[in-house]
Length: 138
Image (tube, rainbow, N blue to C red):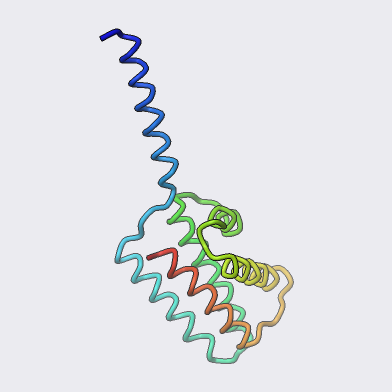
């Protein structure tokens, strides 16, 4: 065979490998890590029913932090929660995506504006975060 044919084949193989590497941007989560995440979700859920403003605020912040860590593992990066949420837009249902953004913005308001959070808001946030996180770790 001609050496240019070998070079062409080698270049095509490299391009294919890079394409496959880029296409597989999601990483799997180990069973142990999945169990840890579910345990953390359960711990957060137990705080919400206390109907104490600080517990409600803490729960939303902790949920967002957990989502951020899950997204970093799944996407294999160290980007912020907001940046990673943009990367998964096409991977989740539109309603869930919009809801999670609303609760992410609530988390930002809690941290930056020191707002109060009702038990109902915290329960609703938990439901949305739980749905997204469990979808991502499946």
